[in-house]
Image 1 (tube, rainbow, N blue to C red):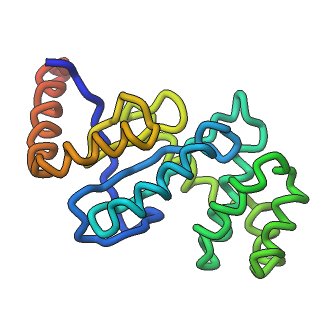
Image 2 (cartoon, rainbow, N blue to C red):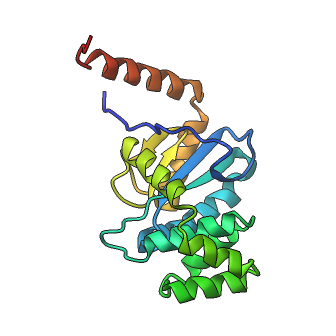
Length: 202
């Protein structure tokens, strides 16, 4: 049986979420604000949300690829600073819509456009108030097998196929036919298999 990477860090109230908590499908995305593919995928996610309505809940997590995208980390910090003022999704969308201009001065301008408390925003950015949150997202992503962006998980299982709309929709439809409890059982089995291979250090 082909091994599929599982989402190690479960979705919690700390995550940025859209959609019904009772949705039978949870779509988790790890993304990079400077990645052109992540930007393209936002259109796909929006279309899926319209298609599936209350059947899907969407979660976004940060995975800035800092070695190739020099503005990705500060952009993620800007989104988290906006989240602290209750406007994560507004900043999330604004950054992707203006992905070609992501200097610090641009991020400040975005904050002004969204009517944020700019003084607080600048303080958060200067003191990296939300860096630990982003690092936690990245750490969880690495543990879950994220290797690039965008990476999607459907009900806790990494989607390894195309992330174009038709392919993701088909994968989600398949997930709707399988109870989420199967994923939990697979995760437990995977954990037990890994534990059985750990050395005895007693």
